[in-house]
Amino acid sequence: MRGSLLVDHIGELVTNDGRDGDPLGIRRDAALLIEDGEVAWTGPARHAPAADRRIDAGGAAVLPGFVDSHAHLVFAGDRAAEFAARMAGEPYTGGGIRTTVGATRAASDDDLRATVGRLRAEMLRQGTTTVEIKSGYGLTVADEARSLRIAAEFTEDTTFLGAHVVPAEYADRADDYAGLVCGPMLAAAAPYARWIDVFCERGAFDADHARAILACGQAAGLGVRLHANQLGPGPGVRLGVELGAASVDHCTHLTDADVDALAGSETVATLLPGAEFSTRSPYPDARRLLDAGVTVALATDCNPGSSYTSSMPFCVALAVREMRMTPAEAVWAATAGGAAALRRTDVGRLTPGARADLIVLDAPSHLHLAYRPGVPLIRQVLHNGVPR
Image (cartoon, rainbow, N blue to C red):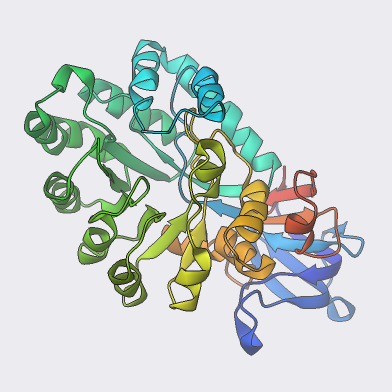
């Protein structure tokens, strides 16, 4: 149903307009008008215009929908046993990716579609209105193309991650596999992708391979993203900045030069605390990045191996507790920061002209997302102005 919709009696409205020195742009006792799926007006509730329909927020907090800018939703099977082994003390090496590759290749399109749909529905219930979805568990020309084709049914932010790991059939032939990714695989995947990504890490792809693959993606019209510096120090962050990547993701092990490079660029550092939680690894130092002036985003890294969570509220709580972010910084990173990581200006904010993606909390303030971890605080979600 179209027409105008007024969300009224908002106790705390997070706009992310950045005015008055407040990044969250908080307005008290506010209202918000939606027309044709967009925010048309925000202001004091006492000045609220007439509308065709009305939602009474009852004094609750209203925030922009979360923007999850890093997720791996196209897969089959699970790796619960691997998780249990890590909790018993085995280190995380990234090697389990190949287990998921085998299961994904064997799955039907319908099975993969059902998994993506289930996880996307989970995300929406928890307030995520925008999500990026990567390929990377097919690692053949046909499987990477079909992964992206399925992902594109659920989001416009799809990422080609053929360079996730070198598959078993190319063991000791990384050059040959990189050539496949740059050639036939990219040609088949590009029509369904907006972005290209590489896992630049020991045990995956080195800087030379990553640079060559990302350059091929850029030549094909794709934007650049990069998995970088998760398992240890390495060249990934500075390579991402060099190539003008929209985002470098993980950023767990950073040198001063890495931080300086990010601070002097428009590249977003996307932090994925669910991965550290699920692998018992050190958390990124968000405080160090923020104090240096780096733009920081939060995302779930939802995947079956190292971060099987679809909950952005959980990641907000982890960021505050474990990464020394303030609640306001974490909320901004999970909304406007995610939008910046996707180079989107239509989401992550609640200002006139933005897409009407918003969440109504069962709480009076955004502070409760970290203050009450694990509690289902998302009372209502509107996506494109439509209650979900």
